[in-house]
Length: 51
Image (tube, rainbow, N blue to C red; front, top):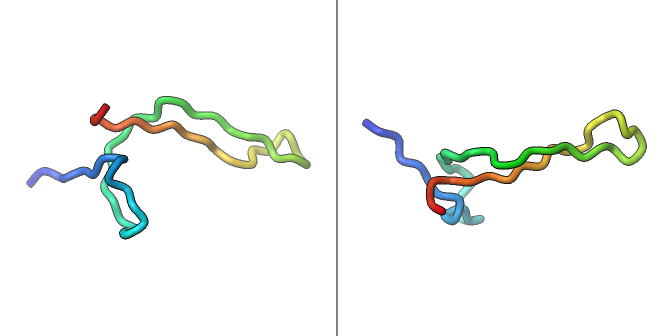
């Protein structure tokens, strides 16, 4: 039985569970304001098969 994946466009606030198959197109970290050597957050741009 093959897994069924949701597309990014199907994400809504009506549910909290999705099965996504995505590619990370871009990844970067944002430094902390007070401690620049420590990452504050990780930012991602994701792409699915539906372009």
